[in-house]
Image 1 (cartoon, rainbow, N blue to C red):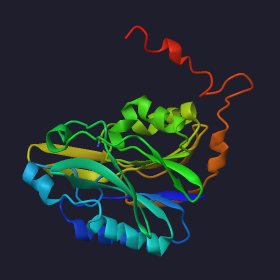
Image 2: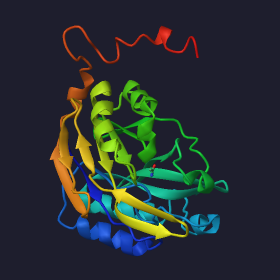
Image 3: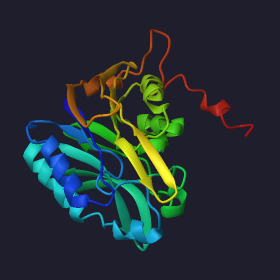
Image 4: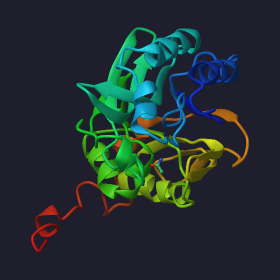
Amino acid sequence: MKVGYVQLKTEFGEKQSNFDKVSDLLKEVQDIDLIVLPELFATGYTFTSIEEVESLSEIKDGETSQFLQEMGKRTDAVIVGGFVEKFENKLYNSAMMVSKDGVIDVYRKLHLFNKERKWFSPGNTNLKVNNIKGTKVGIMICFDWTFPEVARTLSLLGAEIIAHPANLVMPYCQNAMKTRCFCNKLYAITANRIGTEKRGEDTFEFTGRSQITSFNGEVLSSAPFDREFVDFVEIFPKKTQDKNINQYNNVHDDRREEYYWNNI
Ligand code: ACM
């Protein structure tokens, strides 16, 4: 399976030019199975008012899904990317999974970071996996990495790959993903942003270093911290079905769940 990511410098509020930039970065790309784009890749991240969030929001079949569908047609890939979702008068930090035939699934970020808590409702979609060309793919968004339960749940649901759109601002995730992947014996594709976004009283510096991490904790691709970047690697998702670490240990079967929650 050929999978990869687009690392992007998003211009705040400039949806069309961000679409154009992604389109340009994917210009030569064909015959790919899965592409991951950053969190909120077309809108930007550093909002200053709820009106601003609302003005950049969309329903799931809006212009971002149309654009990703077009990219899916051109690359043959299923694409996962972040967007501001409006649903029943609430705003969510969401990611959609789209093929050339349309939207496959939408995931709403469960763990909102920092001022996201002012702008978005917390996600209310279950963690789940979708079957993409015979491979089980789950989604988590950026700060969800901080909660090991997310990757664990996706692993227990059978995920072979975690698609991980991100706008990372802390320096810890890339290393943590080695552990998340090793402990759950699955692949992850973390697509991050670069650049600085200074708006209102907030300045966020995005850390780049998008990463494809293997089920054994190995880093298969690591982007620079300061440049737009696209990369693809060949992976072997069926290998993630073997959850053994050695002859005696298995990351699923060895769990002692009956002792985990009793005293909490
Ligand atoms: C983040 O969740 N965007 C840090």
